[in-house]
Image 1 (tube, rainbow, N blue to C red):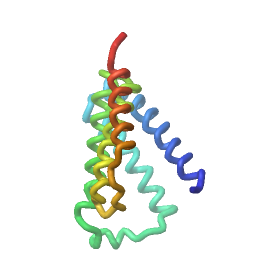
Image 2 (cartoon, one colour):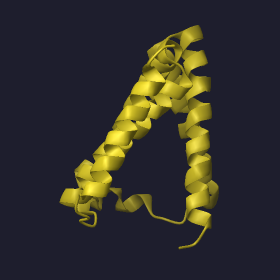
Image 3 (tube, one colour):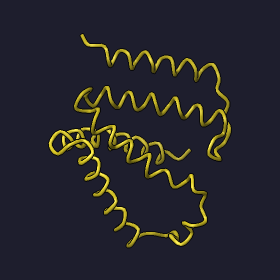
Image 4 (spheres, rainbow, N blue to C red):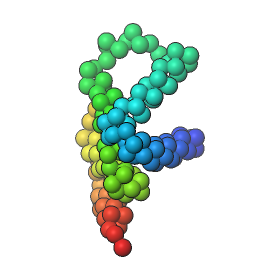
Amino acid sequence: MNWLFPLMAVLGGVAISVQASVNGGLGKKIGTLEGAFVSFGIGTLLLLLLVIFFGQGSMLQLGNVPKWQLTGGLLGAFYVAIMVLVVPQAGVTTTVASVIVGQLLMSVIIDHYGLFGGKQIPMDGKKLIALLLMGVALYLFYKRS
């Protein structure tokens, strides 16, 4: 496997942690939904500029995609709003650890059933043990000294 893709994913994880902290602070100052709105709005403007100057696809094909594939923006807005709300209460580490556990749990389910047109990769004992260990890690992050 090309080493560039895992490195990019790690950088994406770094960005999520920084984003959580930045958005949490923004939400404390201007409000939860307002902070999520501002964050999403600035991201939307950046993406618009990137599409205008570097886009290679065709927005004209938007009408041809399955409608359920348009829910990604709703899920992204939900995620940003949750992060703005939870980070000031639980902290960045606990919040991001919780997000990772949720991502892994849902990813195993998606892979196991091949949902959303993905490759079907069955659940096995190793994955179950890994999820249980992640649950233990999450408990340890939440547990106060």
